[in-house]
Length: 183
Image 1 (cartoon, rainbow, N blue to C red):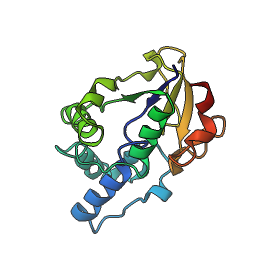
Image 2 (spheres, rainbow, N blue to C red):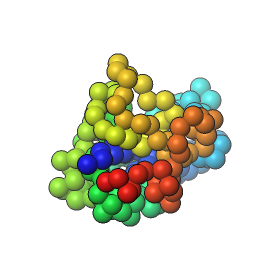
Image 3 (spheres, rainbow, N blue to C red):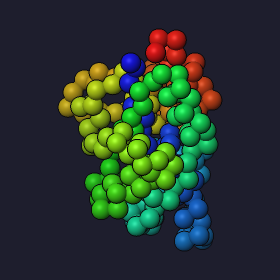
Image 4 (tube, one colour):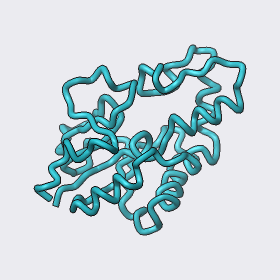
């Protein structure tokens, strides 16, 4: 069976939409960097230094991860992958300031995919240690202590479009890349 590891924030949990709503309500007079303007994977790095504490205050606050909206097409895409015979696991990296993040990632998965799916969450700071056939991740570079066994498939986002050496998908195009017939 083909194992597909899917990153949580980006491909499944809409970090950008959740962040934008909080930013606009909390800091309406400050500049906002839209998703289309983003150029770096870490959102904090797209803001001027004097606003970076504001950025962190949003994604570090209690309830942020638990209440992220689901990415458009994420639920249906996951179901379709499972129906196609793929073995799906969520492979997510927690923040270093993990106090709210880790528990809320589980809460989020239970809310959107059900309690049973929480058994298929892998929380790790080093995704290269995890076995699988494919990793769908919006991070342009997934590095660690090992050479990964999985093939990195980029989940398309403006901040990773400079990477051209890997396949790229979204929830409408995953069938074009993943070997549905071989499952």
